[in-house]
Length: 405
Ligand SMILES: Nc1ncnc2c1ncn2[C@@H]1O[C@H](COP(=O)(O)OP(=O)(O)O)[C@@H](O)[C@H]1O
Ligand SMILES: [Mg+2]
Image (cartoon, rainbow, N blue to C red; front, top):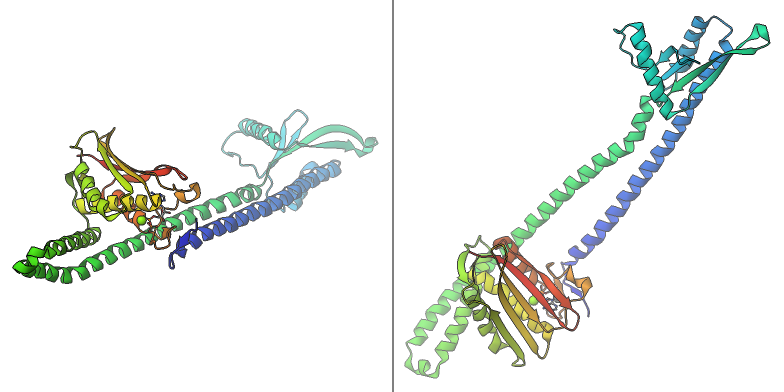
């Protein structure tokens, strides 16, 4: 079965391709950004570790000298020049000798600070193994006389850099999501304007010749000659149908008022209008458990939906078969209408697309029937319309859900 997309409707197709391309490109950018920052993070980590090791070696080297002056030199020259790696120097018993880039509450007494730093060192140890320093005495053959440990963790720069791609991607994702919503909203607002504008214009243009036709029918009715031949009745029927069409267009262009209507009767009306106009090999059946199932609908628009679904069913059947319509009462105060045919069915691949405007598989189709039906049922009646089931070469059932009164 050839699927045809009408000119001007390619937008819906290219649009969905475009969506995938945009998605692919943005995933690629996100992935690239994460991989790249990950590399930076690893390099910076290695460099920070080297700095801490340098610090440790410097202490080892300088241990024979006066501790405090050396410490000043080592910290000024090495630690302050790195990316502010927080580190703690402690002796073998864990007594903290010195801390750098670690926030301490200096209003506390020395014991408290010592405790806090020990806790901090314990936390640091969960990130990185401390670096061991062996202090040697040069006067005694460089024999080691004490052990010290340098605890450290990532600098705040490194921490930020690690989080950066995620923050960046979240911001981009939020922005993209908002733009998508705005784009969709403006697209559907534009579609709405087209639907409503075109419908109003059509109703308006039909209106003038229609009123004059109606007047002419009245004039002709007065002619006894014509009246006898039954011409006027036939003409009147067509004029009335034209009025129904005009009313449909004018209702879809405004907000239609819903009224309690007998669903079984409305459907029977449509079927008795259609039945004589299609092949006699197509059989129509309307079932309802009760003839008094009421729902809040706008009759001209609702009939239009039923007519569209029946015409599609007839097209799907081809030469001979049955269109069966069932009116049921559902749970939750719903009225259910199932329209089944014994036609060719809808392939799975098309099922998601049939409600899109412009989608048709017919040579002379416009692909607007189901789009219109969906708009009428979902937007104006707050109901639902969907494919209940469809089997290739066996048939299709559409279901409409309406709110009962
Ligand atoms: N009852 C059905 N059985 C099989 N296919 C259907 C049926 N109803 C709709 N379709 C498919 O959905 C398409 C869109 O239907 P519609 O919007 O009414 O447009 P059109 O009738 O102009 O093609 C049809 O071309 C057809 O392929
Ligand atoms: Mg159709």
